Length: 285
Ligand code: C2E
Ligand code: MG
Ligand code: MG
Ligand code: MG
Image 1 (tube, helix red, strand yellow):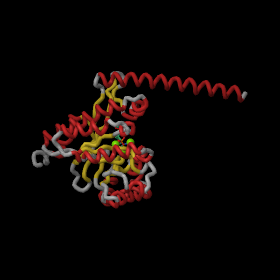
Image 2 (cartoon, helix red, strand yellow):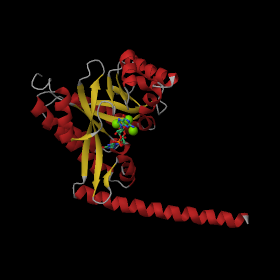
Image 3 (cartoon, rainbow, N blue to C red):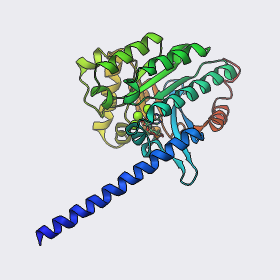
Image 4 (cartoon, rainbow, N blue to C red):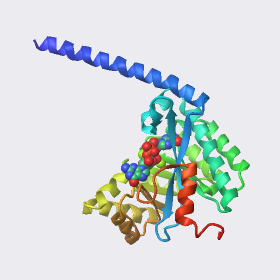
């Protein structure tokens, strides 16, 4: 009887695995089409200075306008793109698009906007990354430090020499590096101290808990102090409530990002949003 059950279970897993493999193959071929037919779009989520409340930058977040499934979020396709080698062309598209937006912003508003771009671990070990960034930096009129490249803490910790070498070369170009989703990995103080990074982004799970759980609030506070002790800027992700913003103000966090401030938006919506909330600033800078 037990044997029979085991067999059934095995058959079930196999069927499920085949299903998953087929699904992946389908997405892979659709991703190629998406690149060819320009189905990707960058959304931009505002980041504000906690003290002044002014917008200081945006994070570029990729979306896929799928012809049948509508708007598809990155968690549904970025890891597949990494596995099948499509992250390089997708990453290059993201980079070009983000630089173009930053450049247009600079021409339109006269002040440079900090543009944060998520980079996959695969891209960091690809030699063309430094070349691509250097070419783009040379083609725009704003300072290189307005570009922030984000790498997650988990990926940074597991990374080898090539990634660190790439980070150092990128820093030489003048761009800044942020550690994304900080608090979810296992970085040691000794390690952090020697990393070529500029900004720490506190993962939103801690902000999520901070409103109700004093331990999470203490963790947020500790990461802010740690960042400052290391001479780094610190940004809190996932701000949804005013109480979280109050906590950040109290603890001296530099920047914040989250639905309370603004959701990720298509470029025309971001421009509208900016006009609505910061119209007094327009033309004054
Ligand atoms: P991330 O870099 O940590 O980006 C923040 C994510 O949190 C975004 O999800 C954003 O929409 C979401 N978020 C922001 N504020 C709030 C909030 O107040 N509450 C909640 N619940 N969520 C909030 P999104 O856009 O779905 O992106 C997910 C992840 O996909 C990103 O996490 C990033 O790791 C990856 N990703 C996005 N765009 C790109 C890209 O162009 N290239 C690569 N390699 N990865 C990307
Ligand atoms: Mg990010
Ligand atoms: Mg994050
Ligand atoms: Mg994330």
